[in-house]
Image 1 (cartoon, helix red, strand yellow):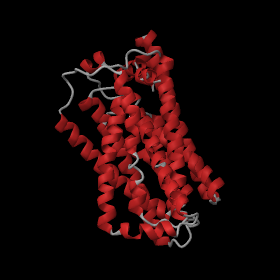
Image 2 (cartoon, rainbow, N blue to C red; image 1 turned 90 degrees about the vertical axis):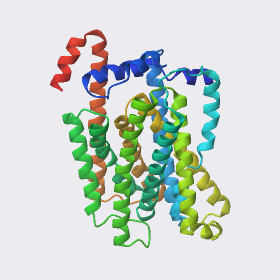
Image 3 (spheres, rainbow, N blue to C red; image 1 turned 180 degrees about the horizontal axis):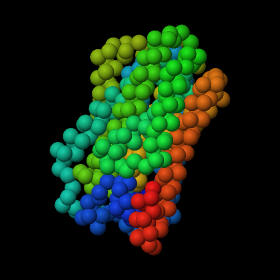
Image 4 (tube, helix red, strand yellow; image 1 turned 60 degrees about the vertical axis):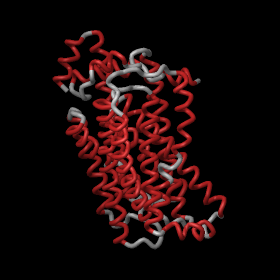
Length: 385
């Protein structure tokens, strides 16, 4: 199993990225890196298998984490710093697959590897951003229902399209632009919807705070994805699943340290014992809720970073948006959230925006396949798109 996973970081992704790079949809790759990259050894179906596995991790992990986070607040949890901490604190479990992969892969001798100091700076900077982003998400989920929260988070695709354009040289097409506009309208409808429901006891002012925090977190999350893609392409210059795990482990370690400092500095740690004693379903339920929320976020994060490595930050955000579209439906079933007319329209717009971008990725993939047989024809089609 370890050998298979180690090989699953394979060539077809690299070959597709190289062709897409010529078409202007993905940033330039270092030529020396591509010659040494392990993403040059697998067949097409093997690359898609790895992509599918990461999609599964992202969708299932994120949907479960959002629902468990809402459950934590509904049953008496009040600590936003604890809700922030559980999003990254389970990173030690990732050492298990990292150890297995390290045994199945040969040590890297590349002279282009960044220095330890450079890597430390990258991990510290991204980890600090992740902690701030998680705090904004926790504050937003405190004041919003799970379905409203998820619909607002769909705006992250629009933010990521902008950041990818400026940071990763991602090409804008009519479909991508349409997706950005539609998702922006979806978030705007939620913002002006007076009938949007929130948890009991939440005032309109707190609802606005929750909306702004969630919107800000979506923008910061999109920035993080673009910066991670830039780090992989321009600095780390390695394309293995071990690199994905290392990125997730070390940035989560920094984010967890920042969250722990915030937990003690804010004084929220003093109320944790009483919070556990007063939890709606008991102490065991309180511990299990935090435990599985932490595990779910780590599963989700591996999927996010894996898709950034294999495809792009924008594609990773598209799949994240799909998970966000699933969450409102799950919230209706689990928490009996209400879906009024405007929120139903916002949900449909979110699906429409996701569909537009998915179709654009389908067109890009089709062009890649044709380019492998007739580069001139693919270039002519790219100009038309």
